[in-house]
Amino acid sequence: MPATKTYEASRIVFAPEDTIYGVMTDIERLSLWLLPDGEDVRIDKFDLRPGGRFRVELTPGDDCPVQAINGRFVDIVSDQQIVQIVELESALQGFAGTMRIIWCLEDVPEGTCLRLAAQDTPPGLDTEWLTRQFELTLDRLALLVERLPSASIIYSEAGARPC
Image (cartoon, rainbow, N blue to C red; front, side, top):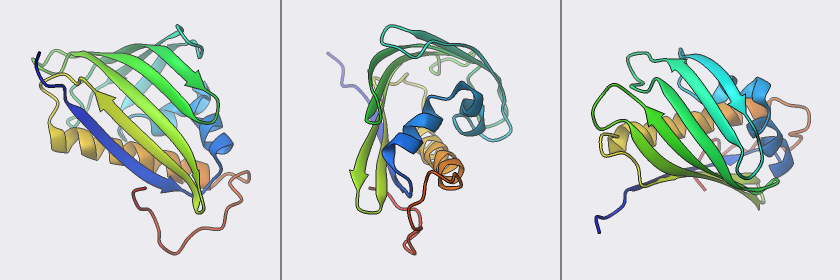
């Protein structure tokens, strides 16, 4: 059995878990943080429940070789975790394929530790590229969430850092 690839990124977000989860599950806000800046994003389907499906179409730029993302929600624990099976559509060999995405939220003194992991990634996804995309995604989400009135956690002088 071949070894599976797993990529992870984490970030302290200066907001409570429920505020972050609310933004993560709001279809109107997904395109603001989920995909790379400059991408033209259209969310065709978003059925947030175990077994529910989603589809995101995008016009790829130079930095994103994916044309569409199809997926289903495997497990959802409100304010704590979202597990997805995601299928990437791409014309580039090695980029298309299925992987498992796990989002975890954990209460920490500074706010929330937000972790993002991908398991069993397609072979063409470069380690550095995917890790950087994960970090940028977490940064965009944090920037959006930390501006909300419900964040109400004092911003730390430490700034953004992994959990």
